[in-house]
Length: 347
Image (cartoon, rainbow, N blue to C red; front, side):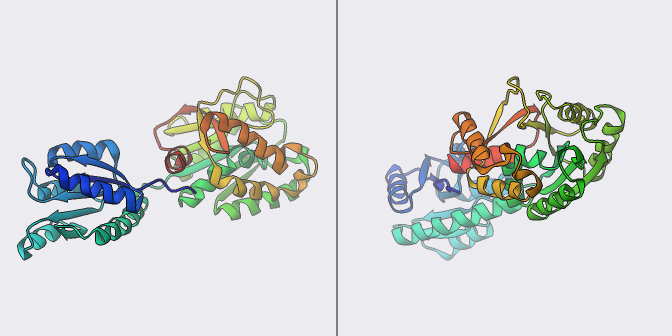
């Protein structure tokens, strides 16, 4: 994955010092540097640019550096803060440390130490942010084995990388498309690779209902795992099972905050995605997941690596990068790990 450039906010009422720090970090550490001339404007800038590290002077008009530090610890406790001052004293150092500064530097600054401190704290801050991120509970629903992997295999790999909880609900064993026992074994192997939980139901392939019995099956899983994100079939699909699963899912997940529909090989031209999730880093993982469906790969052209890659490449016209999975968003209150994190880091 292409890591975004470190973003640093420098807070100092002396424009010469601020410009020096900015120049050093841009040239030696490849940082994107924003400036604020006092503590109050820094609070606004932090909200706007979401820096990886904040570097602040202590003595500033209005909100001092230590008061800014206390405000940051209250509102954004994960962001690392470097405190700098021209006054070398134990009292200042103790005050900064008591306010939970991550580093204390004295002016004139040692450029090498500045770069080392920022580089180290960028990694530390990103680690803190990732550890503090609420984990999503993902439910991917498909009519047949391999449906969800075709539609959101890359996104599921991204969720797995983010250590989100993943559950796959497959409503039939796909007996019309191959040997049901083989497809069951393949589904289990895929779930194991993802670290996902698998619910494999036994509705009749090609005869799945969009009503009561299917709704109840989905509701039971929803009640058990309490998902925050659900992926399912689109209504814009030629396959009757796919349309039925979409219909039942929308009813059964009515209290789930985020629901999105993926594309399948039988989607119609009316499939109209509104979210384009970059899966550049996860396309190879998606291909490995699909390879596990051995009973299907020899007879289903849409499972070949060339077809899957070409489809992902086509949608990158709208989402950027080199590979994208498209989604029709029904409703959204949670962040998509791929849409938000991958696009942010890889852009």
